[in-house]
Length: 92
Image 1 (spheres, rainbow, N blue to C red):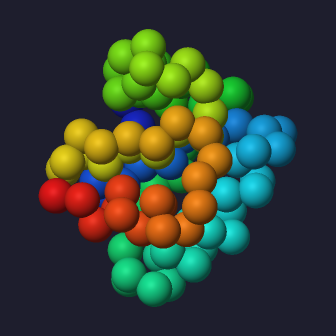
Image 2: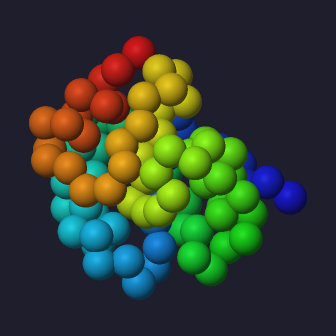
Image 3: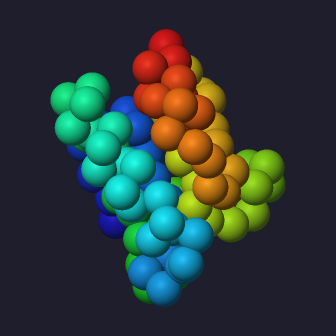
């Protein structure tokens, strides 16, 4: 069964991923500032989320963190600064 998507902003992460943890404060700030939801999808321990990551990644990044905007098809591979994350979230 595929995960239910509740947002057009997706964050694919791994529980033990250091880089993913580094992005958490930026994602929290983004959600607060823009009043948006970024849906967290853990991929290292959830096979369905891992399959969904492959579907959206299409071999572009091959790892986490991976951010995908289903409205604009814009994505971010790995860590980024707040302004880049904000531009990704606002892209339409």
